[in-house]
Length: 114
Length: 117
Image (cartoon, rainbow over all chains, first blue to last red; front, side, top):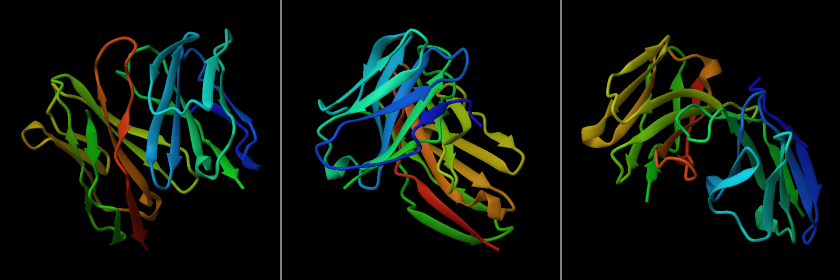
């Protein structure tokens, strides 16, 4: 158990809909990262937050947004969903802002868009 | 731009055999970090090792060992006396240490390792 909690574990929705994925980092970790794992794109970095502020941005679509709240949990919002958004979405956390240590990954949220 | 290549898509070996997973990386930075993660069938990503670019010492942890060679930009992972529980997808990853505000892991495409009992 990494200590990172993601909900929901599974989600099935239709094209055009909007979903919110939630992540609670390990106790004491200030950085939260979101990754998308799909069959064709592999593991892609989406975005990083540190103590409530956006710190790094990767291949995140404009239809996607994220935020980190004062209690350090984070949410990833996916809107106008398309079939291609079906993937496993991972949240990870780390102690510091800089990626010098290990990332602790949650079990992922599997999104299926029909 | 940084890139990680895991040329072996799938490997199958019989239990107790040794197996090496290859990882080749590209980066323009002199300071960077390399990682290996394991993704078992349950789906979570499990951290195995981190190595910084200034530390070329090989590392051994039980049945696992890692060979880092800057000259060939490789960071290979060997499992000795493989076991069925080693069956998983293994990812190599690279992070360039750019300081605050620009850290991300770039993952390879993974190698699916199957240990046959």
